[in-house]
Length: 575
Image 1 (cartoon, rainbow, N blue to C red):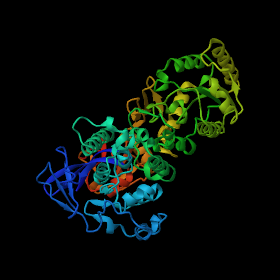
Image 2 (cartoon, rainbow, N blue to C red):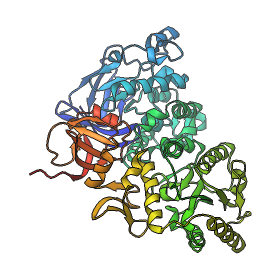
Image 3 (tube, one colour):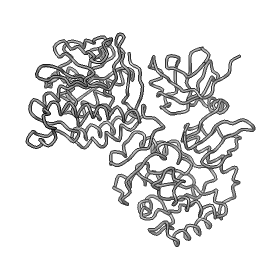
Image 4 (cartoon, rainbow, N blue to C red):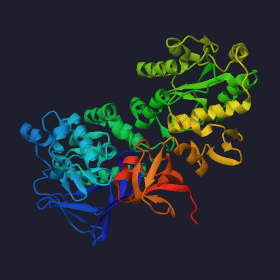
């Protein structure tokens, strides 16, 4: 039995119950023998001859026997064998053999995993296929696959159990395994401690890496670690690229819509599923308020959210000094997100990412920005003003704009030009009351958060509060609250009622009174768009029963028998 304790995308920390005992995953299976003794810190060991997993730390953990013939750590795997497993030697995974041939209780075993160290594409296809078929509440085991350099990547792909077969093999040849890759003995004597064997060094290094991977899963930052590790070997690079390019939907399903601060230090950060989701939602969901007719492009800032930064406070001072400035839509230009409308600056990942600032934009980043700026500029704006500094040349190829920065957006002359251009552009537009501006801008944020129809939350409503705190009210009823701590709109029961009529973010439960948080066992079905961190509206017999924060994606809610599906904020009172 598997109980998920922490998640980071496809990876998870889980409590694995067998008999009356428990083990923690992800974990290493140590292949102990006279030639390769397992270290004192081992938690799980695997008997190669019998294929039995046992725990060294919990005597109540019932031994698990894997299926005969599945565990072959050094099987080369002929072309015919690969065809038998995958349907073809080129990984036609959709026609592969039935999953039950590779499933033992709570564990699904990646067949011929060791051979697929030579074939990243086949490996990625097969792992994705296995995870889709077994769901999130089973464990994936990749025999003979792990070394120090790829452990984080394998965990990120959703593999829960590794073994020391490859490390034992490398150690027997004197090869040292490190996170930077494998080193021949004559090139890596500096790596070992006095009296430490190559085997001891390799096992210790892998165990340290496992502990770090667990920690990064707990804090939701495993992707960062994977990007750092991915350049260790060509196989790692290929595997992560294939996973990102071909299986965005598979990753995004388990990628939270909330999260901690993170570094986007590599080009691969452009392909993070949460970052790609932001860019796609700009294209698919974002619509500015109808009265916004002047588009102002400004650079990002190191401090997040942007409004805390001195540069953005200066831009805001210039903007608010202009009459009728409510018709101006601010659009922040940045990598890897592309663009961030001002009303979305509190949303994840806009308020959490950090990037190295060099002033250099590669061709992929430039193309990304041009596509998004051109898309937003076509949403009803009469004029575009660029105050980007050196980045103005990038957007000039995408939109017709007035450049007020002329290379130095914070200079006194540039700010004066910006004020003059804004005053001229705003004077041409009808005046919009501030109260209308606030409600319409919040409606744009609601549509981005909830999708088409989400703007209905603001119909007939007023928005109050001192930014960045904003309260949505209908008469004397509060419908929702936007705060920088949450980074999105949090609903009350009245707000949930309004969105429920649009069929958005609904979780239907069995016919029972909701007493506390909602567990997966009570979920009948859930809106497929729900991700971890989303607002979830709980429905019972067609009526709103409660509202809270999703702790699982919709797919996991409907497939799991254990775990908290929604942390309930408000629930209907029953007499």
